[in-house]
Length: 222
Image (cartoon, rainbow, N blue to C red; front, side, top):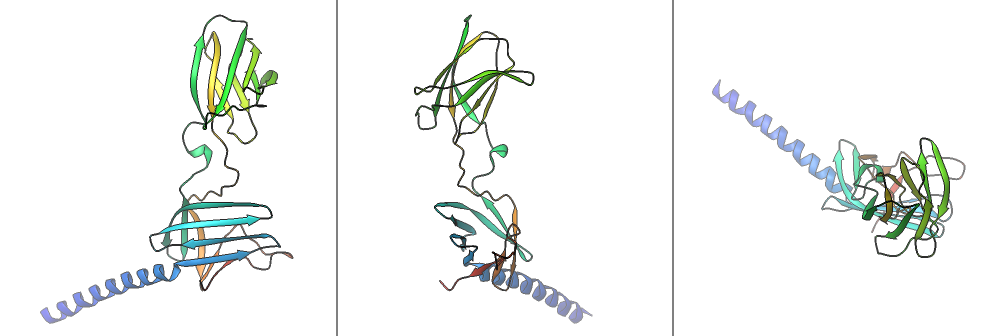
């Protein structure tokens, strides 16, 4: 009976060891570069590294971009998470650098970016309920002056920057914001699942049609 128990325990340990070994082998098999070519001038390459990080490069005509992050293996799927995450999921959309509260007929707004450069041609307006009162543009100095009418909030929209919706305090006469740029050339990955099969990675956003013949990334020989 004791001999049977020893054999049984050995078989269990051997089986668990085999599972771990198989899992590690599968992870090692994934390491490398995978390329996808869509229509002419459109394609992307992802490299899965041994330290569980990845680099994703895409090209679409004259535009291109790079994303980096970490990957993990879950059954037959690769889970991707980029270091950067969508704007809605992280941090404030701006920094309030300066604010003045005093009686004034005008509200002055000054805009700079994260490099302390001015932000001209931003559209700025005062919002009361669902109505925006005569929005104006910031000038070449990044400054905009509005009539200080009764309003709930200040809205700021600028091409290439994250939107600002700021709740106003009574009597506000001056505001200086540091705007954050919007990275339009970044592809975000948030627990993104790509299927792995036969040295191919399948991105669910890619579908075959008359122009796209391959819906998978194929492992390269590099």
